[in-house]
Length: 63
Image 1 (cartoon, rainbow, N blue to C red):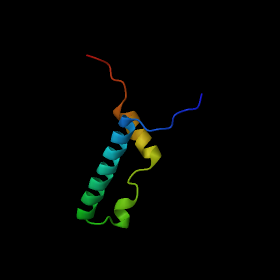
Image 2: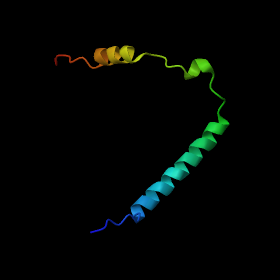
Image 3: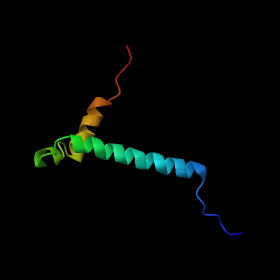
Image 4: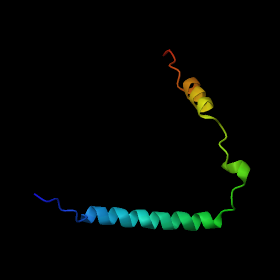
């Protein structure tokens, strides 16, 4: 039995919504100032983020 590769209505709507979202994101980006090289660098390393997560989500005893 050959598989029908025709897109469903849901696929078409989802793709159109994604295209519209990409267009609006690009428009908003054009209004913002360009990022400096300092802003594009990661502020924290992966290890620092993991350590911070461990500290934030430590189980605490209930009172």
